Image (tube, rainbow, N blue to C red; front, top):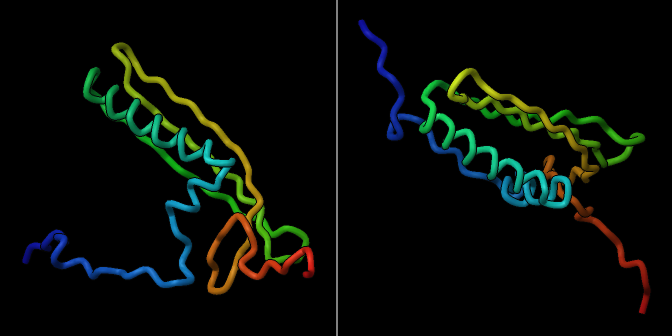
Length: 122
């Protein structure tokens, strides 16, 4: 008996919950939006190198989390690594930056606290 590969119709759909991290907001907030810009650029450049030179390309996003002083904040080191083929060989680079963020209800990661109080009373 042969195993069937999963298809879009056989893979269960996972609906995001209200307390899940919004990936677009998350990437846009890392390193003040610079990380998202880097990822977009690298994806395009690696794809172009694969088409132009053949071979394989690889893009890796890596996130390391560390709690900040027993608080509801985490320090996120975000790493972007990639390898792109060249005419003779390959090229690779690694870039790591950091962003402190809040962890809200259910684990939602945001740049600003969801429970922030007003600083000034009326």
